[in-house]
Length: 383
Image 1: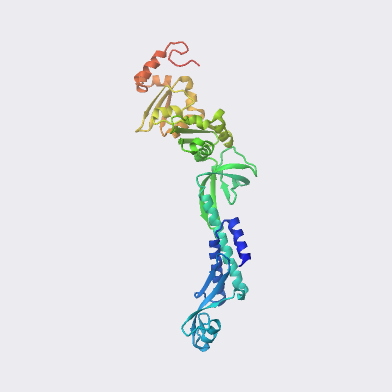
Image 2: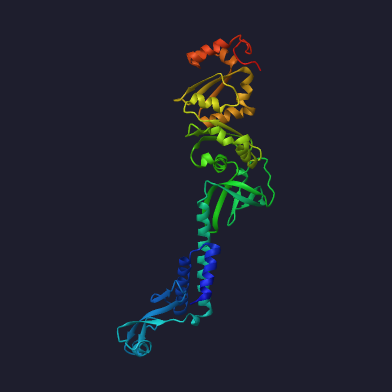
């Protein structure tokens, strides 16, 4: 039993996660390479390695010829006299196995054999790392900030380094070396120098994956994330739907006292997150998406993917948001082009009628509010 070789293979398998079978194949190829360098050819050379004991045998298959004078190529042929020293039963025309002592290989042949093994180990190590991180593509991993390379950041993911480019960084975020951060694995490419891993802190899927990790109901499929819109570092809107009528989708995502959503907000360095209910009715969905603004009426055109929205005068700026952010995110979340008008603007619009925006029952309800206590003359809650 070759204990030293067995121990070496065990260590390589454990540390580098390279299978023993792959290492055995590398050793076999290295011995064939050594034979080719030593003898000039290795077509008739065979290598056998016992997978249990790690004992190996290298031999050449040679044809038996009558006399030494008949030997045209000593690598491929052997005289009957020499053959009978190996096997007394050998006869002319037989093919016998002639053992090759690896200790007889020269320095160059030995060095080449070593290089073959090392090259195979490096290739397999790169392949193992690539496969490991390729499985994590489009998922979130935790990495350690190493250093800034220009405006890019090198992130250590364990067995490989990833590059967080300037374009994938959230403006205003500054990281310190050794700091642990979560990143979204955007792409993993296999290159001759090893896997190249691109990660992101701005991708909307980062927020989605964080919710999947934090919210049990999303992980088990009870709650689904139907749509997500994000402006990294500022605000995210996420629409959720519950497959169980007894489970509140928004409540599950927010958590008790906001614990779940706050954990995600903390990871995103204070980015605001609006969690709203998904609705198959585009009018209701748009109304939910424009929260926290109150909506008077919504008229959505599913064919044109456009929507007209009327809001109270005092809610117009809230509905649109700072620099149009709320309306912009709502449009991305719903997939509709949204035109927001205040009540005054809507009334001044040519041919505007409330009946065009709400059904008869809602319109009568709206009419009934006018002049009542707590409501202004136009039927909206006094603020």
